[in-house]
Length: 397
Image (cartoon, rainbow, N blue to C red; front, side, top):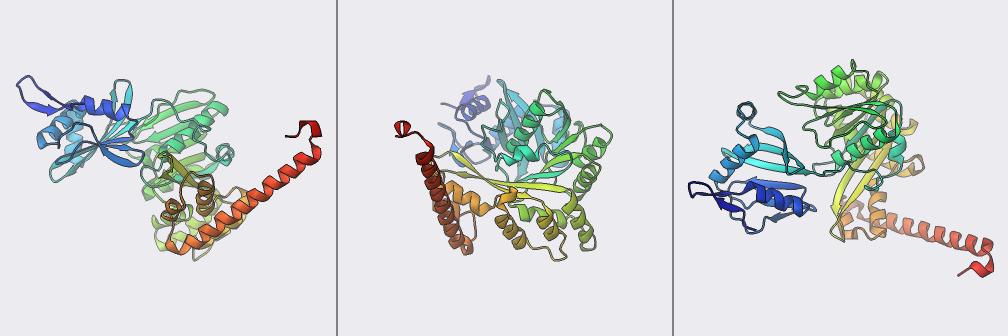
């Protein structure tokens, strides 16, 4: 595929639309355009170059800026002021989230390709306990993970599930909006956050939500103290709030929330969190043995035991992790068990699993795998014995 063509004056410039076509057709999650580099696609976590492409010049990058901003003066002024810009862009029926930033006086483009269909809960094979969590009448639920861990997909799958099954008003705040929801059994209102959008900041949108008679508030990203405080106030007032944060584990999420506050205020925040926080879902995406992305979830259900650990004067992430491991019957799912399950089912290798944890925990992972294998083996034996006892002889294999 040739990604270059002539303009009317005979000059050569990059063909943005052919790059977009290749990204869509090859199932890329992101497209990267950076001066001095080949156009790159992110496919199953791997960066691969666009076929038959040359290194992008400054002229190409400036052309891309004009293409995506459509020379809109308002967008151009926003970029000049902020040195960054997020644009919702439509191309041939595909929705794109275009992020433009700056590097060495040149534009840097990160283009997220949004899937056309809403993510379905069952298709993503999310843990079934999340359906029960999403029906809670009030409290705070957090979905966490690093960039490209699938947080937005999980969040929107939960919203889609609630929309199909619950009679609620759902208010969604995002920057920018990724998936478009149509009201089904619920009434869904979506607002975009940013300069010139529906609300300037996440904290503004959350604060105003108190006056909008919503049952469920979805906060696309909690990344500062103002948004966190407004979110806590919303959850305390009897609403269900579902938000995302950029943290790698459930225990780390508590640490991150506390870091928003002065040390003198942290004890009070711990008591509030232990009351309103209902669950944290931390997830990772790993490239599996079949080259497909495998989700590795970690789930913390905040009950009386974990709540008491959150309230402790000296908060310990290790104690939280140990409590999750020992309270699996309450719906908790530790990272260790999640990795062990994926290894046993042949989704990822042991080496891939070990890369997700500290070297000091490799032996624990091996023991967890053996314990789960023995448990499943014993379970299979019990099922076989029941089958032999109760199935008529002529029907047995």
